[in-house]
Amino acid sequence: MDGIDGADDVIETLRVVEERLRELAYESLRAAVDNDDEAGHKAAVAQEKRLQKARRGVERAIVALGGEPSA
Image 1 (cartoon, rainbow, N blue to C red):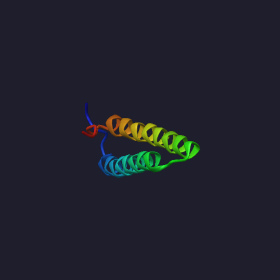
Image 2: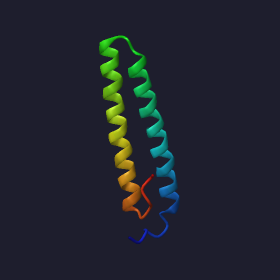
Image 3: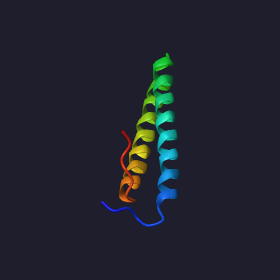
């Protein structure tokens, strides 16, 4: 697939956002494991799922602009 002219800087910015969302999701999973409170555990798991959904959306945007998906 051909990339969109001039989108390289947008793709790079989206890659940074995708990586940060990945880090936040990982932190949420860590918080879920460390949380002894069931409600806190469930909230952390739900947050991780939302972050992963957002991360996948950003990854789709990268691909739509002609970038390669992350490994």
